[in-house]
Image 1: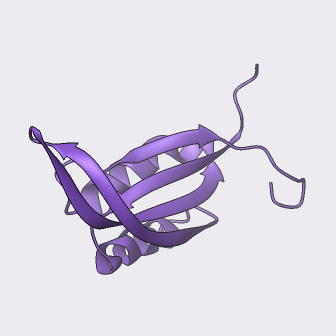
Image 2: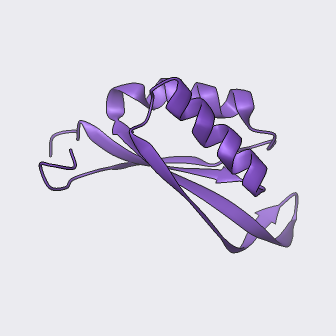
Length: 97
């Protein structure tokens, strides 16, 4: 299977302010076409124990060629010790892509 030119990137944020800071930074550098911020409960293993929290996810659509720049920018502006940055191939209707 050929590598997709387009990707969806999921990025973690610990609060609304941080989610907006990350998305604004990516939009400002024109690394993403746009993004959605959602909030919900989460449970994660962290430093040997399960931690429960409200968590924010930023879902952005972009081209795969921006992957490294997005990772660099998220690490630069995120306050998290280890931000989640997960990249998935994206297929869709021609108008979207």
